[in-house]
Image (cartoon, rainbow, N blue to C red; front, side):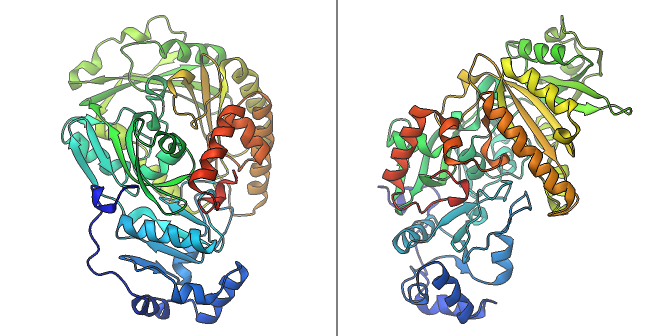
Length: 492
């Protein structure tokens, strides 16, 4: 076990809160003592435990209705699970103390970043939600390593590392996502075809286990905890610090958009480009033309040191079977990284249901599956953003970060937008996702957990496979024996 003094961002406790200061906070909240008592009786404990046995905290445990309701929903806007309270930690020690407290008293607990799960994975009914936004420090340890706390945004990581001309090899497409959030689920980007997931580039972690122990882990130290936390959906530990590998950052990105009428040409050309040495980002998307017909776009580009290089012919484009090609568009690397921040932020502010589905299918299964989706109106209802991106499964090396088996796989990201919570179109879209999920699982698909319905336990076993499931379950018993952590994932 590691002391908080060993962590790069854990400050010593200077003014620990006492029971009296907690009662002052609780008394100022909108949650009355009688309501609080009812909450705890309903969860099988008593008010006495809350008022007389709380640990001293550097931060605040918020019990008012506004904070509890904010933490009761996620980006899917389809579920409401109201926690008992929301912890805003000021130190890693706060996380340690609160997890140990929850473990002792039979409470459930989960870390929440930006709330970008869609099916309640980070929600906790009657438990404690830890708001990671107050643990957001980022620091360059060396030119090739950055250390980030879980609430740090990837945009902040990028700004700090780019000042040294460095970048993580894989970056998400939304800079407002948190480090802890994406490392807990895998973390994909437009360079994943070459470099795997974000979890494949983590050098070390500081983790709070379900028993409230603070542990430093890596591939060489406490390795089983390390493997079972990366893409582990918060089941064995909560990430409080991550050491991330960096590589040389490009100055510019030049992107080409190629349009296809034929789906097989589109998929085959993507497969071919996964082997192109000079290629940088690679992605595919499906759109509708003005007549409502589906067409296919391949977005591929190069990382450049000089903006003028963007106008040069690209060798990788030779031999591809596209119908038309747009002129190359060259931007700074930062503008490329930040390309979707505004649109994602605007969609989130709308608070409209986002019943989406993300999964990977093998090369042998993806064509009939896509034909079904595109030719079945109820299956494609409300899809406003549809990406199909090639992946090389062997490059995804962490045991819990699953992609479909085979030499080549494709990730399908189907984002829908419903008119309102529980509206007719919302319910129809959710039903369509379940039907598509069952069809995909029967074809050997693997889900991307934050953007897929919560699986049944038998489906989780199928998803992880017998060997990994046995290993994962053993780690859960070892590191979270009372099943304290992240119940919303529905795994154990």
